[in-house]
Length: 483
Image (tube, rainbow, N blue to C red; front, side, top):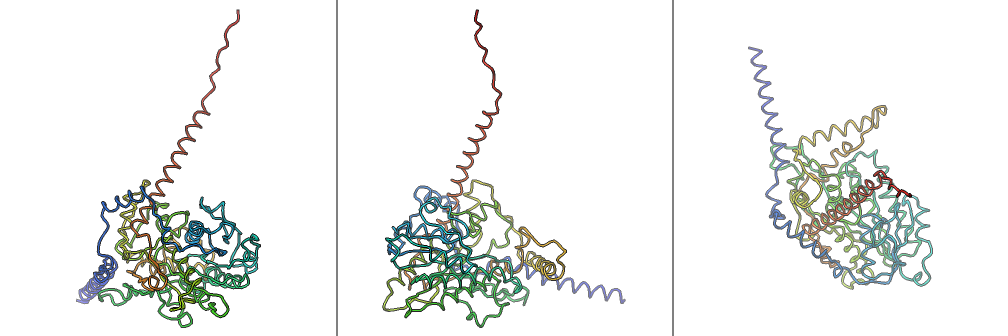
């Protein structure tokens, strides 16, 4: 009798646990109908192919969206990256003198339209003296007296760590490095400094394990105006951030905004790209499209998630619009010391739209096998436990490396949510009108990828043919017999 009683207890517990687990899995695998009005239509194959042919026939021209040239001097910190590179290219595109543009970065710009035209000074922004030296390097005499604008887009992007004892590297670059840029800009008599922030500073942690019978996990759906943080940085606890990266960007942005000094002639502001940035022009994992194409896809548990994308050119144009407003301020509204979120027009997408476009258009193999989110979240916690034990108590164990080190809970707090940002403030105050919608921007990225792939394949084929020809044995030609 005792045996059967114990059996029934175990059975009831097993059934209850199964029901709870099933519910937890289901909530993360379903797209809430509450968020779908912001992204009601899935992209069709016909629309995908039409977009590809459109950009293939006529590449996207953003020139009419770029404010006119100012004749100022420009320092672009992080100007070899995705956003910074487009800022440099857009400045040249609108007619700024190449000699008036300077890239400050740890690596040179590789863009064909930029690399041989713009000065580059290799600089580690964590070294205050090096930053000041790069900023104070002499300019050509005919432009040395022009006003100076600084764009700061350098950062370490680390979306998988959240432990406070791991803040060191990301803090050193994203916070201390930003402080160094601000001080160098002041010493160089810059009048405008605009930084690239992050919409991740606005995200609130989702509670995936709590209240399993609630309709959705708390904070699974987040619709946020202007990517504004829930609290000032001084009131935020470390655990309230979705990860160390978000905290570092909030701290860095705060430094920039607090440096605004109207009476002192030093105006500042920040642009918050939201949410995932993509774009071509540089082989960089900060572009979600390039990362997927380069990796030939990836297992995905965010197929059903609604989120904004933002094209790097849209982000660049927002920086230039902000600068233009600060150069010629409106008497109605002082915009100095403010931050603005920008996203692609036409609303957020569901990630299945992105995957459908990449698999339809890419001429290289690419695949996105679906895996359920909740089991992966459980694995992520185990990975984090191992990483913590190895780092703090058992350094003799091998540290995590490769893709597995990215599979930690902070990554889920960044991407496994339904997120929609409203960029109304940027549209009203800056006059921002993102010229590139997600479907066209993604199509252009894949077109550029395919074009580069075909050019590389042709070059490799030519080289292989040449190698074969060179490897052929030389057949001696018999000399005529002289009689």
